[in-house]
Image (cartoon, rainbow, N blue to C red; front, side, top):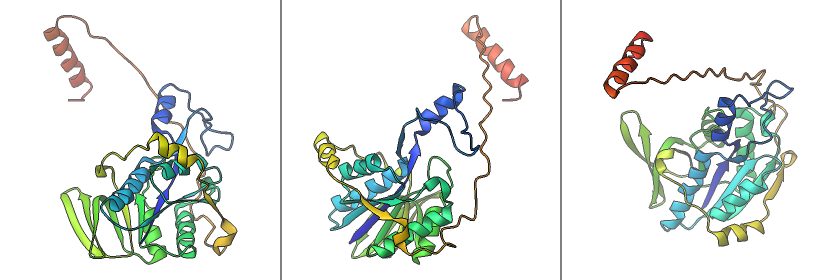
Length: 265
């Protein structure tokens, strides 16, 4: 059985928020990207949980080969982290993710999966922390002609069939179906594991398989974005702090009065 986990590298969202609150976040000269050389890049947290879901299937006795694949040109560090966690194969597809829209990303991932022998199960994070769209897995399922189970917090394999527990506003929903399938993993799965020092050292020697975009057989139409980011704006940050002094009861009464005056309660 082959499990493919789709990985996206993103800016550290906590660091981005801190830069924004400090007024240090800047837009680059192109007007579309952030000028943030000091902010670290890391694996999208939901995608790391997708890898954790694959590893849990293997821990439960599933005989599988886990491939972690990402789109980008300088992905050795995040992909080696996947290897340290337990991915059997790490793959880098040479393309600039910033120049791609969701349809093109799905086309590229689908073409790679087909050209590399297919997959029995494709796992993705429910969404990316940088754009919060969550549409690539659905488009990927369409491109691969696979059913999609979104926002899953638990999954298991039983007699060759997939059983998932989905998170919905009305509670959990349990679905069962045949493979192959695309599943998006939500944060309700739980905390992912940490690699050991020995696994980190072993992963340093592991090289990602580099796949050229030209080798995937995609047409110009399949590689042409339908949606292009024209301009990005920084949020306006307004900060005002007021200390209310006095006895606790009087301070509480003053606070309630201010909240009511501002129509917050």
